Length: 111
Length: 112
Image (cartoon, rainbow over all chains, first blue to last red; front, side, top):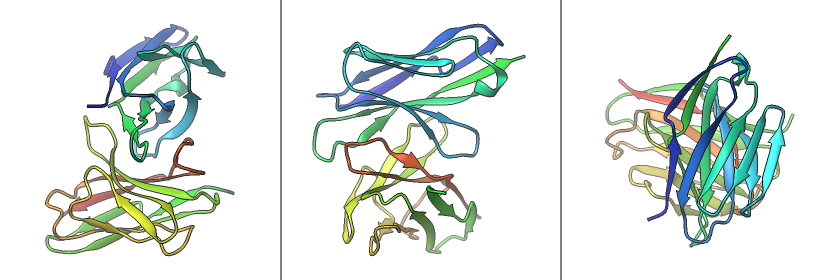
């Protein structure tokens, strides 16, 4: 069964303390790995799409990377406004090619 | 301003009632989706539509119904057959089924 697992469930950082979030997937024939940011009570906001192992994408303090089994979201020198839940989703290569979502990592950045 | 609009933001349902959640997009996207989000679980797909007048069941369609009469609109009805409807409902759209999905701001449904 296709599955996406995110770790850690929750992460607390001090402002400026860099770290990484992990997303491991078991999806046959990956057709894209997606990262979203979700603030409390809001819909997810699209961040990145990665398609092949070795691909990297950056946006401000965030960098997403992809290997054949997992993706990382690196957060460099985070600020309190980076506090949110980060969701990862893998698009499977069967049938409708639906997105399979992980349960997210709750990030809290303290000043 | 292009985007996806969900309404209402909060909805309260009495036992035995059907309620309809609205989703409108002005992004000219062909594909639209409904997801349900519960604490501690990943987003789960309820229904999806790739084109007007066509829609398919997702993983948890029981107790829900949809229509897609216009490209811009994809309303979701939560029927009385849905035994545990309290959740955060998210509508999304994408250019096609292979592209990234963009989400609305959600509707929180509570059974009273």
